[in-house]
Figure 1 (cartoon, rainbow, N blue to C red):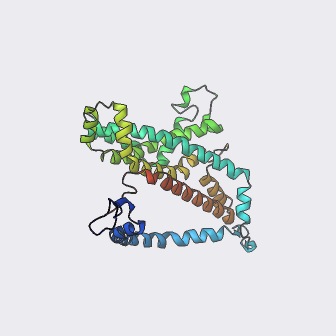
Figure 2: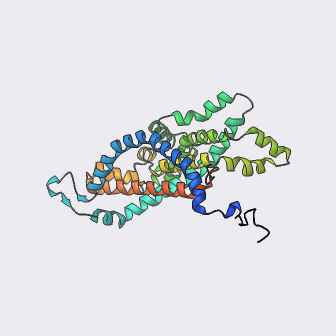
Figure 3: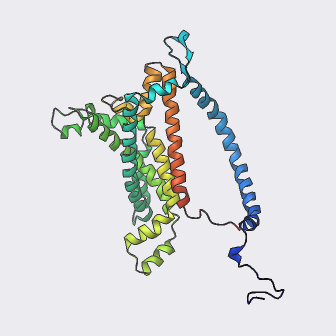
Amino acid sequence: MTAQSGATGVAKAPPQAQPRHRRAASLSEGARAERRLGWLLCAPAVVVMLAVTAYPIGYAVWLSMQRYDLRFPAARQFVGLANYATVLSDRLWWTAFGVTLFITVVSVAVELVLGMGLAMIMRWALVGRGAVRTAILVPYGIVTVVAAYSWQYAWTPGTGYLANLLPSASAPLTEQWPAIFIIIVAEIWKTTPFMALLLLAGLSLVPEELLRAAKVDGASGWQRFTQVILPLMKPAILVALLFRTLDAFRIFDNIFILTAGANNTRSVSILGYDNLFTALNLGIGSTISVLVFVAVAIIAFVFVKGFGTAAPGQGVDRR
């Protein structure tokens, strides 16, 4: 008999050596009940979303497999994946995709930094906190089309107050890269308050006691920010980045008003609009719409899988 034997003479395995399936069985009942409750709570919203979106998405996929030009309706023909091959092999698609990706990455990155700063100002403003929050959120309350027209006027040579700061011959909205950067600035000005609002919600969940304890322990302001605030805000940062990335990738309003997609400033949404409503080509236009939908779904999947597991509370056993 070994020294580890109990009164019955049988050695007992330590708790950590318990079979995996036995531990899973002990946790499965509560987890199963939570999962059932989650599905019941989500079911009404899922049913409504499917009822509203399933048919349009399915019909768009069906149209994307047709050669369908409204100018020649009698020539409608099923062509399978030929439209996808046409779009994906066309330089216009990849130019628009590159422009869209550049605008998305730059604008969202700048908005995250500025939004975090504004969220901290709104959270810890010493005086006039309500007035500060109202002033910061004003740009987000302006309709996007109205804001875009104001930016267009500002950069119109001879009349715009920003254009007057440049040499008289300059017309930045008629050149590709100056126009793209103006579009990015307009996006940042309009939607940074939304990013700040989402981050403020996450910032309000950081316990003040924890920050004071870190300060007492000698942590500097930067250390408290990087080692206390940011880890606790990871879920809010994920939501803010996901929402803004998906929204920025589908950018339409600002480009439509500022340049109408001229001089290689088209986004993928503008390209789809041009094919659907200008060229009346339902087949190619629907193909572009489906590709945008797929790209958005991939972005959402990457964000959730890449950052979701980093959120506090993920992977914690439920007893």
